[in-house]
Image 1 (cartoon, helix red, strand yellow):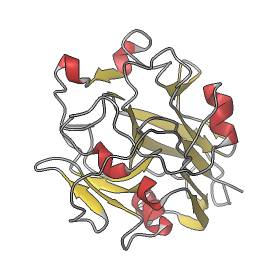
Image 2 (tube, rainbow, N blue to C red):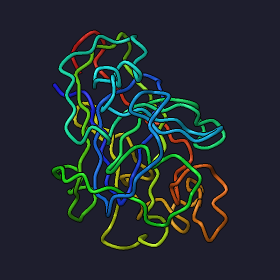
Image 3 (cartoon, rainbow, N blue to C red):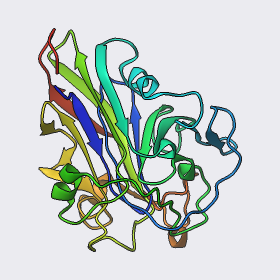
Image 4 (cartoon, rainbow, N blue to C red):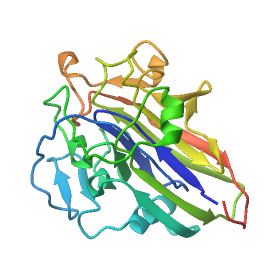
Length: 249
C-alpha cells in the first residue's frame, strides 16, 4: 500500500523535510519562469553562500535517493514512484539558521532552486505544466496545479514514525485568505498527519493572524531577514504517525 504522500500547492511552494523516519510526498501550483543561478555543488543544484544548497532530479539523483535521505536506510522501502517535474524535487543542505534543520529532501510546485536566498522577489515561480492532485485539491478547497508527488511503501520495526518539516511559500502574505491556498499534506496509511488543530497545513491556516505562533514572516517589506527566497514559512513542525510494525505500510 502507499505509505505516505506529501502534498503542496503554491506560486512557489516548498516543502523541506528532515530525516526522522518518513516518506511519501506531493506539491502544486506557480507563475512565470525566472532563471536561478548556476547549478553546482549537489549536481543539478543551486547554491547561496553560507546558505541553502539544493540538488534536483535533473542531475544524478533518482527518487530512491530522496526516500533514502528520509529513512537513512533504517526501513525496508519498495515501490518508490515520483510524479512531477524533475526540477520540483530533490535534496538540500545548509538549512541551519534558515529553516531550522540542516538537510533533508525538498518538494516544490516550481523549481526547488528558488528556495535559495536572499529574498529578492515577492512572486518568484516556475510553471512546470504538470498535473494537479485530487487529494490536494480536496484539502485546499480550490484547484491545484503542478503536483510533485513522491510515494513509496515501507516496512518499519517500530509502531510509530516521525518527521520534521517546514512548509514555505512565496505566496505569503499577499495571497493569504484568497483562492490561492497553497497546501501541504503527509499521508501515512491514508491519514494526513501534517495538521494544526485538525486543519491541513496551508497559507490560509498558518499565517500572521491564524496559528501565528507557527509562522515566520520573511516578506521583503518586513525585512526578509532569512536567507531564503520564500516570503513566509512555518516553524519546524513534527508529524507523528502510527504504523504497522514489520509489515507493509
